[in-house]
Amino acid sequence: MKKGIKVSLIVVTVLLVLVGLLGLGMYGLARKINKERSCDWGNIDNIEMYAGINIPKVAASNCVYIKEEHVKITCFDLDTSRVDVDRYLKRNPLTPFSSSDSLVFDARLVERSHLLEWVDAGHAFYKMGENDGASYQVLLNSKTGLLCVFLAYKE
Image (cartoon, rainbow, N blue to C red; front, side, top):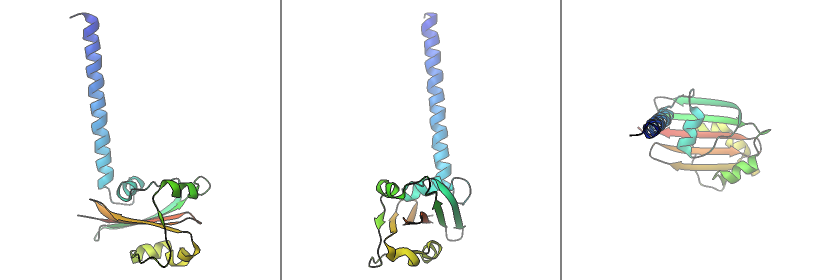
């Protein structure tokens, strides 16, 4: 074989190995984030994976994980100087909420989000659902930029 072909084969092989290793690394990182339940490392990414929403720029957050119940409740104060909440609502599938909706939210989520104080003002939006790993409830106050998420992990 000619020297040029050998070099090309070696370069292609090395690149394929590097791409494979990068892919395995990304897969491992995604699995680590997916399994992480604490309020520390990977919290936002974990919530995005389970609730299927994007968490934009955040000014502050408050999170509690109740290990015995496999429940995480996190409230984010969106950085409204950098996040257009109306645009956020167009890109994320949240539904307008009114007091006539017969939805049942976890009492701890209602308390932490102060939902009852602002639900009738027309600023409340929600998303609820379930997937293979968790059931979730999301509440957004479009006026203040308060975004609260309740995750109940399945075992």
